Image (cartoon, rainbow, N blue to C red; front, side, top):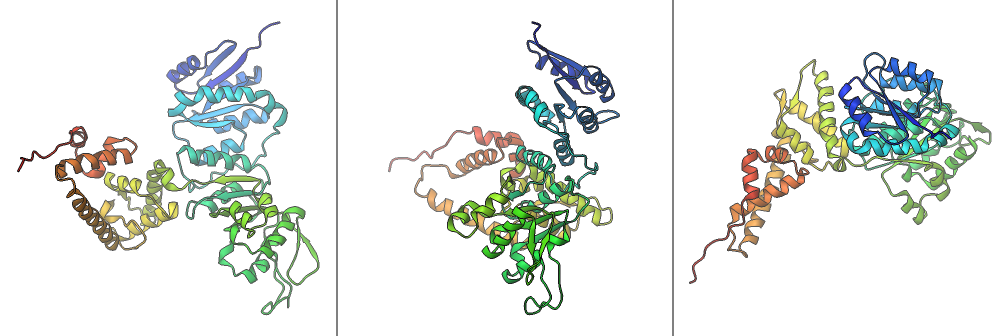
Length: 475
């Protein structure tokens, strides 16, 4: 019986990359065919389908996203893997929505490609038998407001692409300011409900006694002040998406009524016995530990499981520092455009300072910080002194506080050093501060040197300098 051969197609305009990919994927019973254009691989695919198609996103003529769409229109079970040097948010979401197996960054293929390809090939038969054709949604590019090149954010984009195809409830978790509503809007944008309304409600912003009316509406005279019948948000966005932010603060009584809507798709307005039906997809978000709230009895367990069908967690900005520069430059470019074409930019020292900060307020704090810096700056180059960090809102106040804290730290260092008089303090400080700064910037000595305002060779000299001790004569 002849041995089954696995066929892999690779398309990329770079002939050197095609040669590397063919050699990298070479294995017994595997054939790799390479193409420079999407149009060529389409012709080959129609004649003799492959088991796995790997494509660069940016291709001459038809791009990788359009190639993915064309291939899966003719073969709903096609296994397609995309890659690119710069993968935008909209490309990742669009690709996953259209059924791509994965989207990889080109500079990481040397480590990731073989593992992902082997995983995809193991899934080929199962996927062909279980996956239906992806729903076609108008190919509109999402505004690049959800930004990130970190692995954590790439995973978020992929989840958005997958979950947008269904009507399943989604629980979005993460700290305040990390962009939970943006994720909810992206899910709606790429879903079959995109042409209907998206309604966002912050549960904490509405008094408990009015929240039920806000969601489900009320009849005239239902309570004091109800001067007329009013429809609620569920009726307003029938066929669309309702986003409930800070769901953990919802009163238990309203939780019961929300659970009925999720289970039965129906509810009653306040003051009415008439049942109203509504087809609404519910997305929820919280920065609280809902499992803990369930254990304490302040959040219904059955509602939690109804809402937590799919969970998307957005990591805080301090855990994805590689996204800080990208986000900061995006916000600065957007605000520069509002200043009638003035092109503003960061100095390298300013970007290094932004990357070193922990951003307790996450992306929202970063955006507000850049906005304040633009408002206060008198030049088109933002320097560290122009950027207010912290919550003071005042550039000078924040800087003064920071300087005071540094002086306090130095005073403490002087006090402690008196107990070890045999150490030459300045060489020790130079060496230890240099080592700590390099470690803080993930062993990137050039960034550490820029941050400290030192030439690179000086920084390296401090680190290499051995510990020195005073030569004290015996008294």
